Length: 204
Image (cartoon, rainbow, N blue to C red; front, side, top):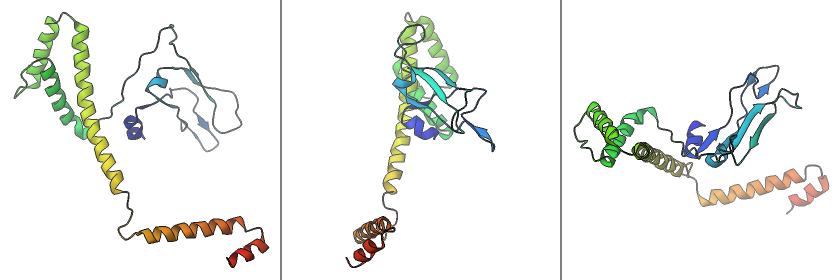
């Protein structure tokens, strides 16, 4: 679920509450999720679970959709949600080091993390525009993350393509036979309550 949400730039809007979204004699849980994309995520306000009785084991979830934040200003786009797997941390860090060094014109080859950190610290102190420095840092993180996540999406796409053919012995002829069988099954199911119609179709 987390991989699907991250790869499709989706966010879970549920918040911690005393009540859960589902309650029955067997137990309770937060099985019901409210999911939104980047733009809608910024417009959701006052998410809550009602204490009033509903006609179901699932409690009622309420929220407001607004084009402005509570203070009247326009909401900021939360940006892309990137999910980097634990075994990719080292690769992500190496990509980030290369990008941030290139962006700030710092020699990165063979240098330790502490040296790079010190160089960036000096650059920040000498910078007249902290916002510009921060945007470059954020851009380096995003670019490194996008490259890693792009690799993940390529692998997932390749897996889906490999799954296209379920078995090597399946043929077009078998596909035609399966379609005919399904059509006959549907015809039979539509005539289960009509004996005369069923007998007439047996001869077709």
